[in-house]
Length: 123
Image (cartoon, rainbow, N blue to C red; front, side):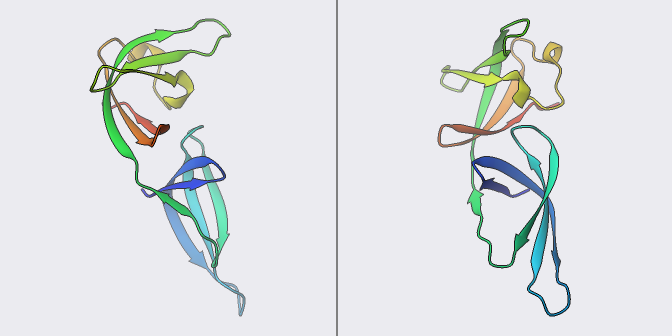
């Protein structure tokens, strides 16, 4: 569940395992979700690797509308707690169909400064 910033991308760690072969140094296999694409990946770290842990801020938002059509990138326009408009690419809503993003639907944004780290649509 830890969030990391690696290679300018945000990762959500699913599991990790230490491994060591013979007299060699230990390494760590980390299984994570790439929060930009939603794909699960595995990365191997050496024992001396350093990572950046992210503690994001939570913002409750509501869907105002979806804009864009055809080959154009679709964008979901949200209103935050102070009714400021926040535009989020539809591709960041992993596993959520566009028809499920109706006006007034609650969405939770996790942000690191101004960067959107994670988008969650509560059931």
